[in-house]
Image 1 (cartoon, one colour):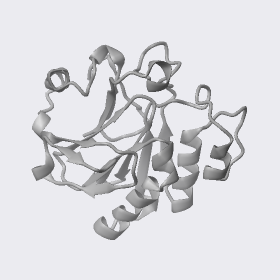
Image 2 (tube, one colour):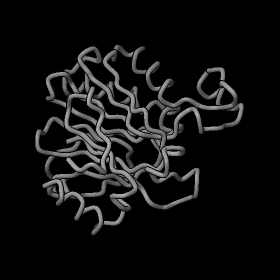
Image 3 (cartoon, one colour):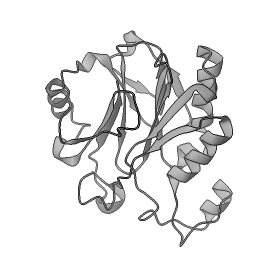
Amino acid sequence: MSANIVVCRSFKFPHFTTTKSCGDMKDAPVRNAFLASLKINPVDLVLAKQIHSNTVKIVSKKDGGKFLDGCDGFITDEKNLALGIFTADCMPVMLCSKDGRVKAALHCGWKGLACAILEKAVGIFKTDFGADAKTLCAYIAPHIKECCYETGGEFEDIFNIKLKNSKLNMAEIACVKLNKMGVKNIAVSIDCTFCGGDKFFSYRKNKTDKRQLTVLL
C-alpha cells in the first residue's frame, strides 16, 4: 500500500487511514483517483452521510458505491465489500470477528460514544451474525488524542469519568466500553490528528471541511 496511508500492523485485517497528502477524501474525483491507485473499485466501498448518531446499518453489495443516509456505522459479512468512515478528529473504530467473517466500521466522536454506538454494533454482531464479543478484534484509528482534546467539565458527567487536566481520552473510554462487553483484542493508533505534524486534517485545529478516510477492506 501507499506510504501516504496509516496502517496498524497489530490489527490483522486489511485496513488503512489516509493522510493529508492523499487529499480531501470527501471530494469524489480525488477519492476515486486515490482508490484506483490502490486497485480498489469505488463501487465496492460503502460510505455514509454521518450524523453523530448510534445508528449502525447492516450492508450488502447492493449498497456499494453509495452514501447511506442517517447512520454512523456499517456491518457486513460480505467479503468483497469495503467500509469507509470520514473523520477530521473524530475516532474511527474498526471491528472484525477473528475469523474475518463479519466486519464493522464506526464513526465515533464523543456524541457517538455517549449514545452507545459501540454497544449497538457489538450487539448486532451477536444478534444478527452470531459473533460473540469475545471473538471480536478492534482497531481504533487516528483521531484527536488526550494530549490535545481539551473539554469542559460536563464530560465527566456524560461519561462518568474524572478528566485529567480537562482533557478527554476517547480511546480510553472506547477501550473500557469494549472490555466491559467482552472485546479484549484491541489495537489503538498512536497518531493524533491534531498534533501529528500536520499529517492529518483536523477540524478542531482549523475548522476544515476536508476529511481523511479510514477503510476496512
